[in-house]
Image (tube, rainbow, N blue to C red; front, top):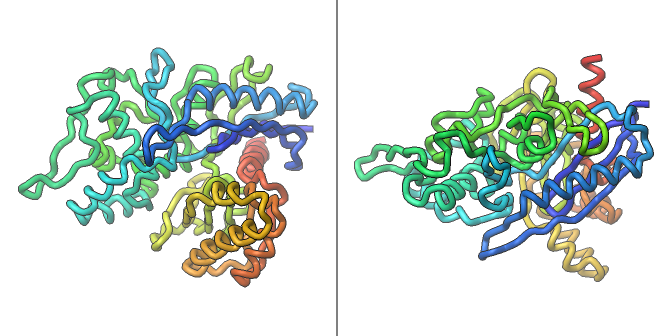
Length: 415
């Protein structure tokens, strides 16, 4: 038998799972992680804790699976997206806590930039499929560079000058950016750099597509976007396909050297677990609720959705995505009150239905996963609200399931 080891670095917890070749879970471990809120709108995590807990759950899951180490064929990673980490490549130490995707500290500067330069939103959206929003990584890393590395020489956004031209951003003069001492990465990049042999500085299509710095049509870091958000190219990771040779997991992590063959942002991984043919639609109910519909090879911009990248064999596919924030915390507050829980589930279902009505393809079946789907009522409530067939994924660990399928498909294609 062949088995696959998957790490799922979420926002409230980290999971490790061992899957069989038939994509059945044979070992699992989970641990919660902390979030801090040092100021209103600030949401941070410890990169060191993300790393330590990842190692812990990986070892626990492998032991729980009782799978011989020689039967583990490959390692894959899925992760919370958009969260930004900047670290010193020589010391390996982060220069600031991880700024989590939920963080709102750059909301004002995003609003100011859009107001002062009305065409900026269309320029950025045309290349990235995304909005200028504090949700994405670009303004987070810009904030770190501006406030931690250099207080004066690194404005985060290029805005119109008084004469209608651009104000040119000069790279920071302190902190080693010019000398290549700093690296930026989303959570996947941080984990790969720390757990793989040789410390590769890498990311994949799906995570890069959520930074506001990556052109999802050319599949390259975009010089204009880097200039707009004041991010030096020298700190960016190399981008590889989501199914690729990322490197080798170090022996000391779980007791075996494992090839790393799949890396994928959590929502795209969950979508891959359902399928990628155009019109396929899924909803993940977790810390946030995320609706994704696959578009195939066609690039489409459609309000109020973001356009993002999905894994593909030779080239990535496109998908539309919508985000509903705070659903997980809303459920946690009423978890032990049946009447309030029913109302909360219904509110979430109505929010999802609002986006379903705006999709370009009306789904015949909606596949759902995520922690909230442990409550079986979610299937019937969403079906009643939306008037579509709703099917629960075979596991609520849909993100890890998608990575297991990526690993299996990669091995099948390359055997």
